[in-house]
Length: 327
Ligand SMILES: NC(=O)c1ccc[n+]([C@@H]2O[C@H](COP(=O)([O-])OP(=O)(O)OC[C@H]3O[C@@H](n4cnc5c(N)ncnc54)[C@H](O)[C@@H]3O)[C@@H](O)[C@H]2O)c1
Image 1 (spheres, helix red, strand yellow):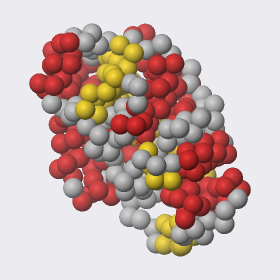
Image 2 (cartoon, rainbow, N blue to C red; image 1 turned 90 degrees about the vertical axis):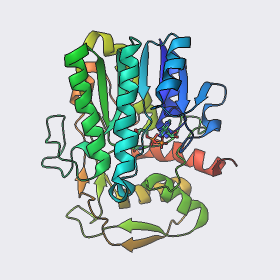
Image 3 (cartoon, helix red, strand yellow; image 1 turned 90 degrees about the horizontal axis):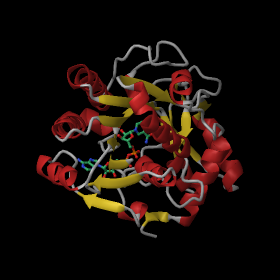
Image 4 (tube, rainbow, N blue to C red; image 1 turned 60 degrees about the vertical axis):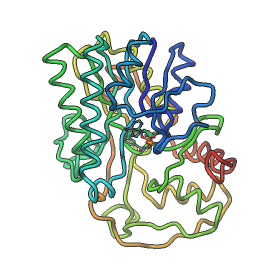
């Protein structure tokens, strides 16, 4: 398939673009490089621009025959979304609606969306399946949920087919360690722990008084290579599935912050000092996915469910890219 991949120069996007090529697809990346990296898509077709710009989209879709879209591009910092909700509604919702309008206009009726576990809000039961109540606790989760709902109505009105993939905590790096996570600011645990391994600066542990086995928050870390595989499968199943589906992509196993740090100490051989800090507002105690529906619907199961492969690949990337892609 000829694919338009918005946000393909970002962390999950770049690993997926590579995997899409390996699966025989032809991705064209559309990214404004606000958080993405040109180096991460070296050798790929890259259009630098805003995915919500109608004229650019009309040009692109007019000159290339596109079969489907993979929509990664978004603003995705939870804390920032609380401080600047308007930006999140504009980037994640308003621009996405512009994209959907132009796609429909040009007859491109298939899309895979990067959604998130943040659509669920505070967990009511663990593990969480797709029937879990959706009550986001921040604008980031709200905008993704609103877009999922829009996709449902676009299917009802126009037959637009979509799959929204609700990822849990994406982590790890490409198997060869060449593509990894570089965000500024970096809010994710794994890259921050590995940075601490490189610098010896203490890594903050937010919340040590949760009712978990060691007092720290538990999360479901899913390997970015498994996410990439989930996208290939979702795309290839879109036509058969039709509709507007939602699927969790998670590991099904929860690991605490201290377990991640302990595993990182083993893998890096570094002491990794920690600094205990208070809980961050809105950080639930535990988030763990049930991904049974993804297994049934698209035959997806994580191939790298353990912490080791996540940390080994992320460490390979961190060690060889101490200053991100520009090192
Ligand atoms: N990383 C995670 O743990 C995680 C978890 C759940 C969901 N997600 C979702 O997955 C997607 C990818 O996440 P990521 O961690 O790779 O993020 P990322 O920030 O690395 O990638 C997002 C990409 O989108 C681009 N972008 C943003 N706004 C744009 C615009 N208006 N026009 C063109 N390009 C634009 C950025 O430059 C960046 O390359 C996001 O939609 C995110 O919400 C991520």
